[in-house]
Length: 313
Image (cartoon, rainbow, N blue to C red; front, side, top):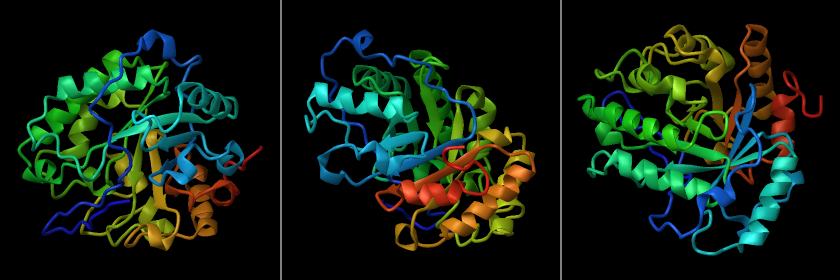
């Protein structure tokens, strides 16, 4: 994972580095690889990202039992897995109730700053998703300079990009999520609105938000995570974001698996389980996201879900 700390002065935003899709699109008939079932699942969602290509393949399903979505890196234009093996593994995941998505961009990509055409990039990525038979795409937009500029170009780019993706990846057939930083929902610091504007423009097209509640020197306990963020990034805790007009059940709590997976913001799994329990008691049913497998495996998510939506129940 590549990430940067976010401060109110420099506004260097923490990032969840995951997947950068390759530019090359293999010549395959997209219709032959469409998902076989409805891929948009009801709340709650439990999402794990993998940036490490462990043993060159998807982990055994038993190692990620308890998750509903596996966000995958490096899939798979370089031929790391042949088509039959890839399809067999994905079928096993889907049979276990786990969707497989790919996450776009990451910390090394600055599409707005670079002048990339949002419509073309989205079209290429949607084709890639369909050609590899994936269940959807996660938008890990990390063009910090564009968002920090506050001139509306980042929000416009993301809105066009999302609209194009959704036009080619229909809702109910494909998952489309975003992975914003929690401060991007703050009421302070982004004069063009950041993700409050993105949600206003295209929120109805986005299935849910995998929110990164870490690397910001806050969200370190259940109260800060759920109820009241600091004055540095006001109104950016879970229920404060919901109070800004965003469906609370589309807000997924994202945390690092271990203290080593982030600069700060780590909460031990057993404690995080109590946070989910408290949020559920207030009517929330969003779920949890974690960076990253293999540090977060079936044991990690079993603990985190134990007091709210226990695995197997």
